[in-house]
Image (cartoon, rainbow, N blue to C red; front, side, top):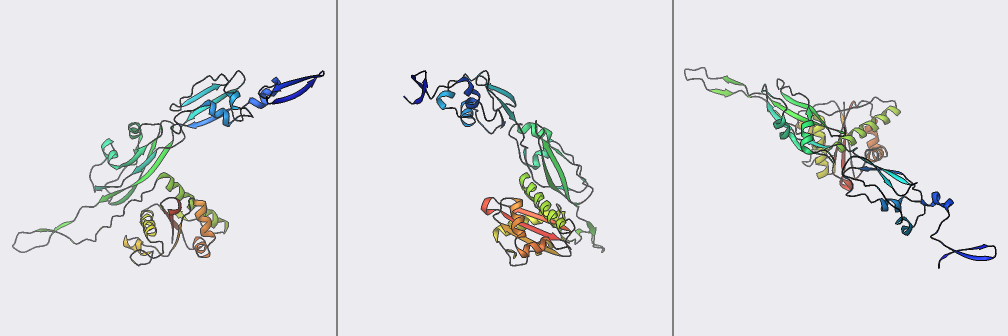
Length: 341
């Protein structure tokens, strides 16, 4: 029999190792953590025995099975639960929701001066993805709100939309609404022949697609801009404004090109900066940094700063604006950093 030998008054005693003195109880059988937080939807079930095995002070599996466990945990329902292992040891389990909804919206086109308002039908047309780990899709649609669209003004408008789940976690997304101006008609035949209405020649309007980013990717873009501005401030330079207008949308098209052809030369052989001219966007000077394989904003900024040429772009004093694009995942994640003045 495996155990410890003790001598007492000349008598040899055997005490089995699975026994314990009362004074040993708290040290050997208490939990290292007596509170656990579970994100709703992350587990199918919660097993108190397994939790005890992983978060105990030197308790054997055979001994822990002798505990009288009381208390159920419903991991699919928000709330606080208490599991009792005995009179002196209990565990608080908090099932919580800290995850914001997933929200992706598609761009849309409207006619100038048309009547428009957000309602269930119009919102449904722009929703690409709307889901949550706890709140139902129908409830999220009821909570989705978008800023007003001014159809009196032609061109691209960037409309902020947001939605909160039942726990108050908020997701935001900016969608592009393109308001199309009407074609101008005029009479150009002044002879006796009845006038024929024809279109005046007008410059074609180039429609810029909306950048397709997840909320996490938008967060990474903001992180890159913040890190760059921190570096510039440390070097006594002005901050760069993060451009989320048409330049932002075209930078997304540029990062797709970089994913296709990892180079400062575009797939059609032209220089990188020509893509902005293709969409009618002007600037005085520009610079471009690209990268591949970095998974976080900190990692990609560190790599750029460790490269003399990329560092020079980040620290050029004349730049005033910055655009960041990202695409892909893991080792196939691509980054584009554009600077403008």
